[in-house]
Length: 444
Image 1: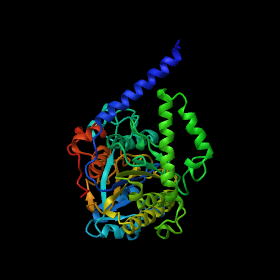
Image 2: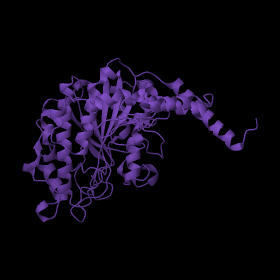
Image 3: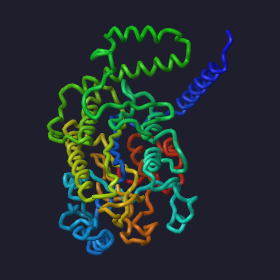
Image 4: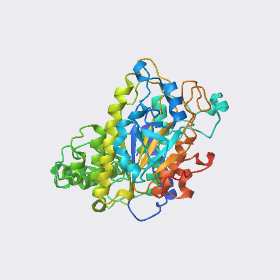
C-alpha cells in the first residue's frame, strides 16, 4: 500500500507521542504514603493586592504602611487599623473580609507565607537592574499566571507543576489525579496526563448519552465505531480518551447530583468560589467510593485586577473568599478529611503599595499567600518586606516587592507533603536546585 506524505507524518507524530509517554512511564515513581491526601489550589486571577490582605499592626510597621498607602479619606488605599482582624501571637492583621479565617488561625491550621514570587534564582535588588536576571515578562498577567502555574520562569512551559506530579503518580482509580472546577489551565496539564474539568456547580455527563452512558444505544454505536481500524495508534488513543471520559462521568455523576452532606455549610453563598469549593468537598467526601489515593484540585476566583475602586472591589472579593474558605474548612472537618487536605492560594502577582489613579493599584511582584489545613503548621513564614517606597525590598519605587521566596519552593513544600519524594522533586520543579531550601517548613 502506498503511504502519502501526510499519512507518514501523522503516523510519525503518533509514534513520537507514544514514545514520549513510554519514557515518562519509565520515569514514573509512586507518591510516598498509602493514605488519602489532596491539594486544593485557589488561584486569585488578576493579582490580589496582598498589601491590604495582610497588614502590619505594630506602631512602626503600620505607620510605614499608611504613609505609603495613603488615608482612604483623601483617596488613599490604607485600611483603618481598627478595621483589621488582629491575629493573636503576631504583629499582623487580616483584611476585614477575611474575618472568617480567624478561628482557623486560632486552631493553628493557617499559615501565611510572605513575599512569594516568580524567580529563576535568588537575586538582589542590584541584580534586578539587569534584565537577564529577571523572570520573563514581569507584570504581565498571562505570563505570570503561566509561571505561577508551571513553576518555570525562564521561558514558556507546556506543562504545569501539578500536571507533572500527575505524570509521576500514574493511576488514580476511575478519575484523573487532577480535577479542575476553574476550566482549562496550565497548572493541571502534564506531559503525559490530562486533568478532568467539572462544572462549578451541577452534574457531569457526556452529551447525548443520558444518565447511564454505558446503557445508551449511542454508547453501543460509539463502541462499534471505536473498534473499527483498532490497529491504528491514533484510533487507539481516541478510544482510550473516550473510555476514560465515560469512566469518570459514570463515577462522578452520582457524587455531583446526589444530596450533598455539606450543603448547609455553603448555604446562601451564590458566588463562584464558594460553589467550586462545594463541588470539591463533594468529591472529597466520596474519596473512598472513588478509590482515590491522591488528588489535586484547581479552583479559580477572578476579578482581582483592581486598577480602580480597589477598596470596594477587594472587600467584596475577600469577603467571598474568606467565607468560602471557612465553609470548606468546616466541610473537611465534617467529612473527616481535615488533616488530609491542604488548601493554598496562588495569584498572578501582588499589586503596588503606592496607589494608582482611580483608587486602584498597579501590577507588582512578590505577594503573600495562605495555606490552610489540619496538617499545616500555623504561623508566619518568610520575611515580610519593608513597606517603604524605594526601600530595600522595592525594585521600582512604587512598592513592587522583590520576592524572598520562590514559587518553586512554595510548590515543592506542598508537593513533598502530597508524597513527591525528594529525588523526584527536580522532575516537578526543574530549577529547584537554584534555591537554598526546597521545604519552607509550614507542613507537618
